[in-house]
Image 1 (cartoon, rainbow, N blue to C red):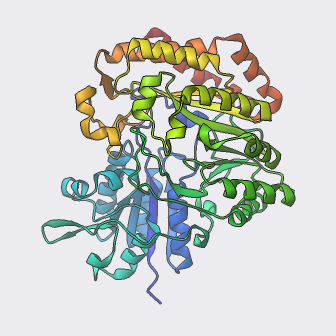
Image 2: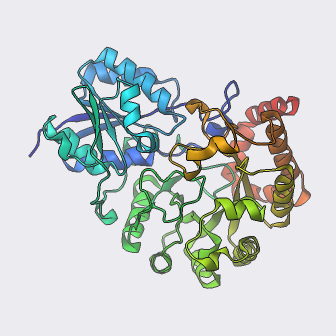
Image 3: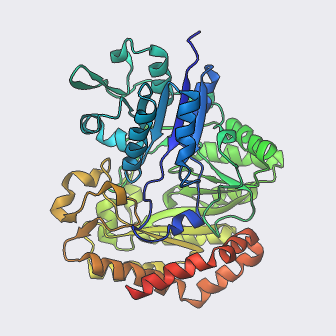
Length: 484
């Protein structure tokens, strides 16, 4: 057996919000870093020693990282970063090398999977990059002792003065062979982690992932990690997973964070049947595309405990939708906005809450398309609504020619869907901010929306507890935005 190695995993903080403002995002949602939890669990099964520090859940605790480096002297320190958290990872990695020069720095996650070789060329502190699915790449790396690195698919490394990328892995992991993510390695789990406010009925709760990849190629989605592959856990594995979470951590609700949970119909129906028969008292949320849903699936999901479904609608303008949203079949493209409307009503009829996900600032956006989107959103019986700010991530299809459609400030630190880094032709940043705020104000000022949140007093009492606890933060954020 290979010699046991010590690996410290770090989830950097990054900005993840609007510079200069209190991070409201952290107040309403702190998600467990599932990628790192899966890596840690996988390496543990091979006899290695892993530890995780989550800077997002515990900002300002960087000294714990430095103390671990001094006291335990790990062989590797691994960072999983998004685009917006990448530079914070570089800051921590630089300090780590100062404290423990022998530690090997590994970066993985969506940003390095998208930008790849360039990052090792531009940031010498990175010793290795892991592209795509990380479990086996990382295991082979830490067990290689620096020998035969060219044989590790998915690895980026330096060979003399050259940066080498070995290409993408062709053999991917059978999802059912994965151990459950190592939630127990998180400080104060599940107490310090929470789902978005008003998006669950009971606490404690957490997030799970039961599939990897997505076959769609929407212009705004970064598919760098899993490409267009799609793999999933079996219904039997899913039930064991949820049962484990309840027995080990008393979890009462999970958010299934799959890109598109309902893509494989048979899996969903079998999972629902197993969950109903099991009697497991746990509710769940999931994400779906409306063309994958129908009455019988919704009935099964409701009986199995589905509490809310998130629908990626993106825009209410038909021309923008046709340009940016990907479809697998021509049938899906047949009047998609009307199909979405019908399905939203069908979800509501089934007794499941529905959340609409939209974005503002797509290439080709106009004042008219914004007004069209507003009218469409306000006509839907949504329970929850989210309007993100379009961000052209390096791995998204639109990234290659984004400069042809407006101005783009590629400032990684604020590329987080909370800032307008891309301004479509015909707009200014100030105007986009005004329209974004107006969209939210008009949505939340409607009486039926306010009444819906009032019902959360008994539907999600923990959300109201959190709301009142953090009311000063929300009011401060609201007052700042009113002045803009």
